[in-house]
Image 1: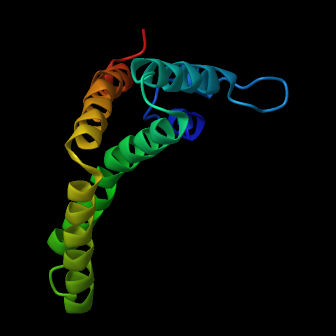
Image 2: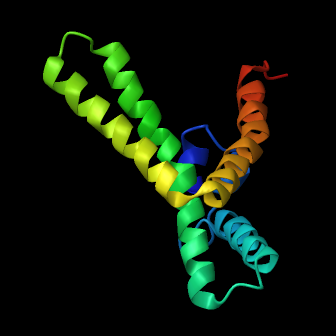
Length: 132
């Protein structure tokens, strides 16, 4: 996914660099290092519990996009009542899911999102800066 995001201008182009066979090597290396750091920071957990924890953190971080989409649909298409109802149900489901994931996973997911903000702002600033 970082390669596609780099090609779309959301991630730095550095992540989009591919190896000889089209593999986004840099993106895989960075992802591997980050997952390893999370695993090492939680080494006291058993492997099954660690897998559950990483899956929960991943879900918590991803739920923000679903919540934003549901709320945006409610806001942007106010005249479409069936869509509005479905979006409201989706938003409530996402909030319920976030609650069910637990505070620890939610805080780690939030930390991941916050950690990505400087990268996103840097990319936006780089695109806005005139080429010299």
